[in-house]
Figure 1: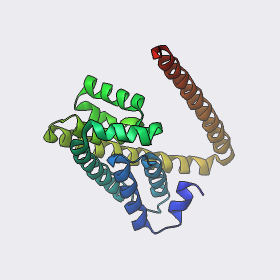
Figure 2 (figure 1 turned 180 degrees about the horizontal axis):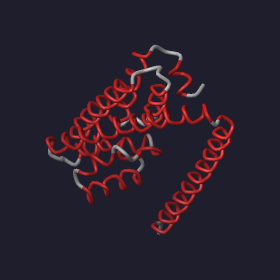
Figure 3 (figure 1 turned 60 degrees about the vertical axis):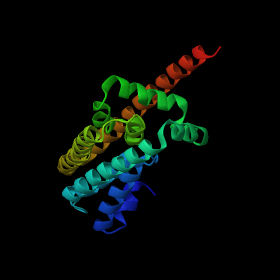
Figure 4 (figure 1 turned 90 degrees about the vertical axis):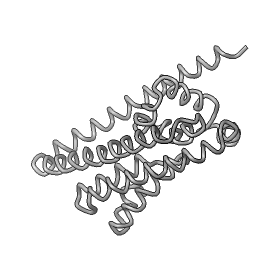
Length: 212
């Protein structure tokens, strides 16, 4: 069962709660599909199954609260915590992942927290890493709140209006719309797979070059 189908089977209020909880846990540092859940809930709102306002509010609250808890955990655990996580969960917290996240913080500073909300890797690590690096909490909080609201509210609004437009368009051009959507979906999937494979190959070459 897809995420959207599962969300359709539960009451609207619980959809909003699940969105907030999943995004909050992801922001805290647990690798969960927060963005997938948010997009699915926003699509449901375009079908009038749930309020887009409440989806955006709950998603924003989950992002802000989760990142804040992650900050506290990272500040207490420090670098040793990431070392332990890297040994236990190398796929998500391996040295290469942590190094890339730290490089983003070194380059962008507090903006890494704001823009990290839009990047899968930093979305999980931004809070704990900011705490471990002893970023002043007030600076973290400002970037965290702004990033959470812009990401959650913006994603919900964009997906909601795209869903409304797509629904109206498909009513007038049903078969044309279905063919175009299918072709677009296949093309996008192939493009993303090619980019992911290319990025993986480059990363693998870089790791190989670092070996003695």
